Image (cartoon, rainbow, N blue to C red; front, side):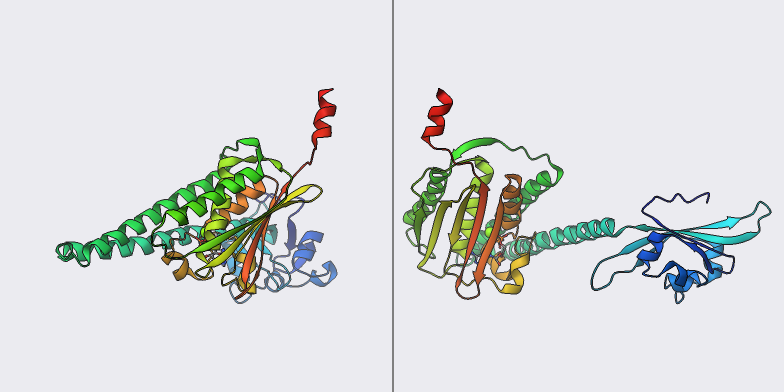
Length: 353
Ligand SMILES: Nc1ncnc2c1ncn2[C@@H]1O[C@H](COP(=O)(O)OP(=O)(O)O)[C@@H](O)[C@H]1O
Ligand SMILES: [Mg+2]
């Protein structure tokens, strides 16, 4: 084998000059789901299931690399096949060697990346297109009409703000992906931090003379002060997003319940709403980037579809977990658990002595 290097985990198949298998290693036979004895003597075209697309002559004359999809319902398997000829010095071709390399993971990453780029483009094109049409209308004369001009300007401003939020969210995510996101860990009193965030939401409602929607925040906290090691800014962003969602997807006048409790080695924080809930089929995907149950509704409310994706990254970075429990039409509860080492005053006293 000259031009092709095989690794231990690669499949290797050798054929005679008619393309019939003479040798096949364990890996190749398990990739192709064939007992080695069954495979020997078979044509490689049948073994790789490429008879409809290639002739043996094509493989021998111009052995290109092929990407072959052997995925089944049970598991994904994508193989890259490299071919090279077994050739004597005289030029006589006595057979073919095929190395099969498992590229399933790589293909999945590539696929995710392509999907992500296409999502980002789409998500930005939508607000840009609407901004352009409002600006067009304004410049074609609507600017002189005091009845519509302020509204048109308001929409362009809101959409621009949303695009900026989206870009900032994307930058945050990309910093987390590349590991360049700085984490400032400090011991924080979670009861205080949660209260601070909730106070802000109470205040926002109080200061709004004509709120689009009213809500009541209920607090159900443990008596004990829970100290956890977190990045305050990042974690505040997570709490903000859960609260924003709870309010956004709540009915007018709904109650949002914020809970905080501790177990033996975790703190558990939750936010419950009485909103429209999340269909069972969507639950596994709502932490995915850009995934929204109702895109139009989310956009109309200024959503970017990135809040929960960022929240999950942050919580995982802190060694915790985030999940949701929801019934369609009945409301949702989002939970976060964080690692926690309870220590009481006695321990502190012991350390001091
Ligand atoms: N409290 C909630 N009640 C119902 N659906 C929710 C709730 N929180 C999140 N969702 C669903 O999860 C999706 C993703 O949430 P998120 O990532 O915060 O994006 P955004 O809020 O920008 O739409 C939302 O679009 C919505 O469909
Ligand atoms: Mg959100």
